[in-house]
Image (tube, rainbow, N blue to C red):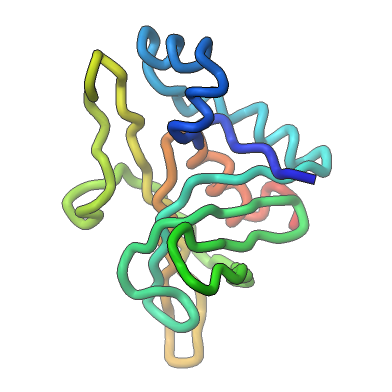
Length: 165
């Protein structure tokens, strides 16, 4: 069974297959933070969601530089799969976050779009960084998830423990 995309995670193929959504995004803009409430309810009800996600971490096994992929979130677990890789095996996200902070993406995320308007007036989504600080063998380490603003609340809630994982 295919995992449904979270409300803020969509690609060109999704827009081509759903022209009404494409027009809605063109006229209204990408979904805002409030749109993610339905995804949180779905995950709490036992479903999973796929979130477009750049990942980086300060310790192994996480990549040190931003790498694009998809974060799969369910009430029980989260794992990340790289978008471009010869070996696209899932990386389990087994951290227990001690602190979770959210901030807008900025110059520290150079390959991530900062929002704005694309060709023909299509609005580009804004991305947020969800930083999880966790204990590692030699102190503290961080894992950062750069996700669309509409999906940030879902990711934040998962790592804060609000989705009962």
